[in-house]
Structure formats: C-alpha cells, structure tokens
Length: 78
View 1: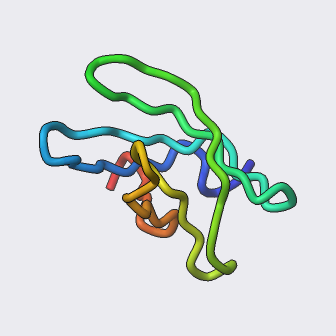
View 2: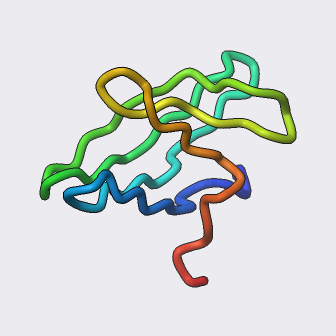
C-alpha cells in the first residue's frame, strides 16, 4: 500500500476549512485521487499532479488559484 494513503491536509480558504485525504496517487498518470470534505459534503475527486517528483502539487479552487503540495499531507495520527 502507498505510504501516502489517507494522509490528510487542511486548507483554509478564507471562510472555512477544506479537508483532503489521499486515496490514491497514480504516478504514471500523474493524478491524485482525494476524499474532499467541504461544507460538510464528502466527495471523491481526482486532480492532475504538477511539478517534479520532489515537489508535487495539485491546483485547487475555481481557477486553480491554490497550489496544494502533496508533501505537506500528514498522517492523521500526527
């Protein structure tokens, strides 16, 4: 199992906190699948990964204005 599975990241968008949990990282397709908790709704969403292997991120928001770095996700126990 991928060591990044179910790692979590909290993003404050100015109004509320959006929580991302990693479900899968597909390095071949350069895609990350996440469980996203936003305004009490839970959805599963895939995003394209950008950057290089040491600095992967995905863009979040209506216009992709937020860069969410994959290496800043943490284990839920931390």
